[in-house]
Image 1 (cartoon, rainbow, N blue to C red):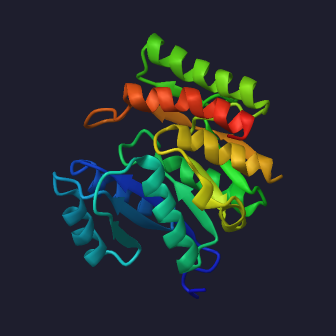
Image 2: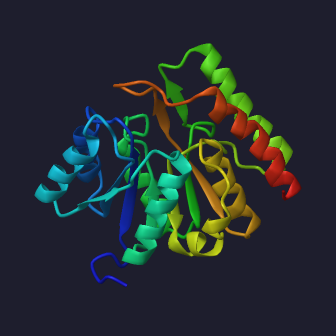
Length: 239
C-alpha cells in the first residue's frame, strides 16, 4: 500500500467530452478538500479532455489520469477507477461528476461521515436539507419516481438510490465482487448501493444540493433509462 495514499481519499471523475469542465472542476475539488487526490478517467474524448487532464496532472501532483481506449459507459469507467484506487492503496474512494452537478463544497461533509465510520456515504437529494436546482417538474418527477420505484422493488430504505455522489470505504469495494457488476449506465448507482446493503454494510445519507450541469448536455438516453428500469428487477430476482 502506498504510504502517500494510506488513509487518503481519491475523487474519481469519469469524463467524456468535458473539455470545458475538467479544469474548473479539478481546481474546485482541490480547493474544497485538502484530504483528497483526483483520478480523471477519460474514455478517449474526441474533444481533447484527456490531453487537458494530462496537462493539469503535470502541474498538480494531486491529479492523476487514467486513459481508456473507448467509451463503454459510466459503470465501466468507475470500475476501472475503483481497481486503480484499490491498487494504489486509497482508503476512501469517491464518485463525482465532472459537470458541477455534484458541488465540491459537499466533499468535506461526505468525507467526514466516511471517516466517522460509515461504509458508504451517499450524497442525497431526498433527505432533509437536500434538494435540486434548475430542474423542471418533469425531471423531478422522473428522478423521485425512479428512486421510489427502485426502493420499493428492492425493499431498501435508502432514499436516493440513483445518486452518484458517494464515498466508499475500500473494504466495501473489496467485498462486493466488482467483476460481477452488470450495469453500465446510471443503473450502476442503484446496483452498487444495493450490493453494498446486501453485504451488510452501512449506508449513511448526507444532504446535498444537486444542480443541473453548467456546460454541455446530459448523457442520459432512453437506453440508459430502460437499463435502470430492468436492472432493478434483475437485482431483486438475483438474475
